[in-house]
Length: 312
Image 1 (cartoon, helix red, strand yellow):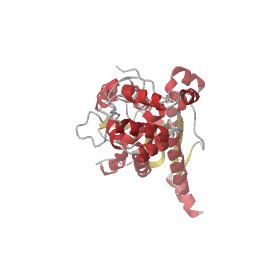
Image 2 (spheres, one colour):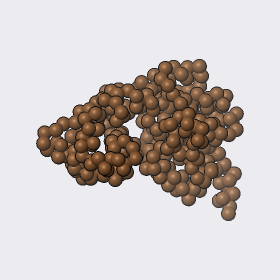
Image 3 (spheres, helix red, strand yellow):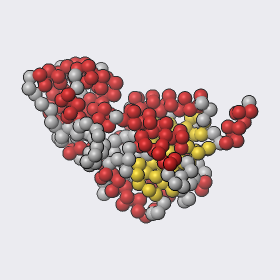
Image 4 (spheres, one colour):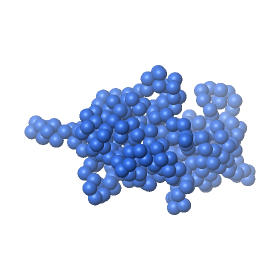
């Protein structure tokens, strides 16, 4: 069994109030089902839909969730399509919708997936790499075909990399001189050659970290997928229901923050609390992955609240 520590689990469970009244839960990022298991324990009447496009993760989640059968259904799909649940027979909205936007240890620690700059593996990075019908390009393909402008935009917009242009220019020059990039190690070594040593010392982290993040987001179209998933969540959330989102970098968190603000302006509900919840120092010590996590909660108004608002 893969080691798995669910980020901000206590805070997620605290947000699931009145557990006896929770009937439908959507875990939009099922992963290894850590959050889902605890939610099903807490909410005895709940049925859970878990979305994941990773075949290996689904297999492990199925095993871990088996004691709760038949109170769950695993959906082999990208979370951008959660809105399609409204067309499912018998589905009448969700009381809790959870998003944990981090990359799982399952993906990071398997070198053949190519997600980590710490392991040698192919430059793949597709979340649905096991799907023969995957429409996503591999990271290797992006690095082979994108021009300087395109690579700069990917590294700057998705990785918030200060040296995006320099790295993009170095990659294209490497190609022009017959160089190829097939593995994570080759990409890391090229980035180290491109950036001067004094620059690398000032970066405060691994010089390839933001580039790998940017490529993963680009490969899987994560920002557009998240936008579509949040749109779907707004349609599915029952009166009084909560959308709970854990993000790990500012690009995702800004989108969630702005979307929640838009929902409030549309009088759908409001963030509770108003600001993001951060992990405790104890959790960060226990689970280093949680250090950059931010949790935001949006609660839809009850029907009575909506009616009172209309009268005003």
